[in-house]
Image 1: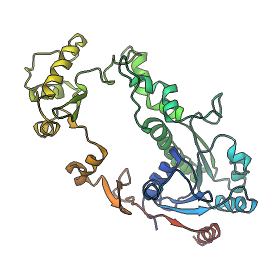
Image 2 (image 1 turned 135 degrees about the vertical axis):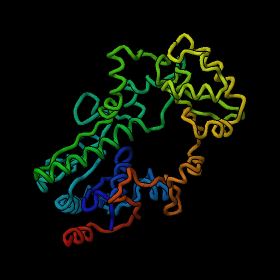
Image 3 (image 1 turned 45 degrees about the horizontal axis):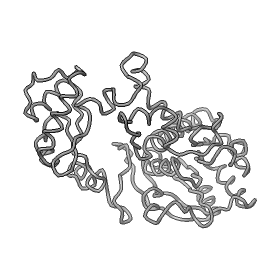
Length: 362
């Protein structure tokens, strides 16, 4: 049986890509019992290895939702669930007869979580898009560009996963808590543009107070500051420098053997000279030597690791950030709980009637 702070919570996860499967993985690791509704023939986006990571910890049930009989089985599951999460375009679930109205009619305590890029309302709601489009339309992609260059794409972490998955997970847990107190379920409308806009709140405040210039390569946290950027090392590796506070900046200068009074950290007219000198110095040693030199200091200098290197780094190994499960190295559930720890659970397959029978007994 699943353990964790969400133990006893039953969720239905509709087959999807983007934010929904990662949300299911996270909530499963925290103890939720999740039945994943698979389309006949399987989701072509996933390999067996992908199943072992992103789709871990669910009970897979194959249903053909074009079949009246299978739709009825899904509604029977809905009747006994705490929540459902889906990532279809607006209107798709309604056309199947499985939208919020039908599901909440069967189970008034149900939380119906919907994750899309543009949201359930608005002029773009039926328009296709991906992570890159959502972060482009919220200002996030523009803010991480370097002057004179196209923006760097931050994988699909900012839109799909930070703006989508994490807000979907928070929304589901919040609404389930509300339903348990009030007896009333509700719809959770998660739009990635909403989530990313919330993530940019600090920078909205900066703009309002004149502390942020709305153009690339001109601000404290966008790679313009010599003490908050990456540098190339001898041999081609890189280090990340994040010495924002004056005391950390002082330790950075000491490690680089630069006199403490050489630069005024906050004088932006000195930043080009700082960058030039830091660049030259960091090129004089390999990345691993810089890591060793700054070890035990608060200079905020870290090696830029590949994902493979990160899995083997002693600091991550010591904390057990990654474990091998189903033959694949992958992350452990997060966050960590002292009294109700999460765990990685194996996936399984069952028929809908078997799941219903188990839920009725439970």
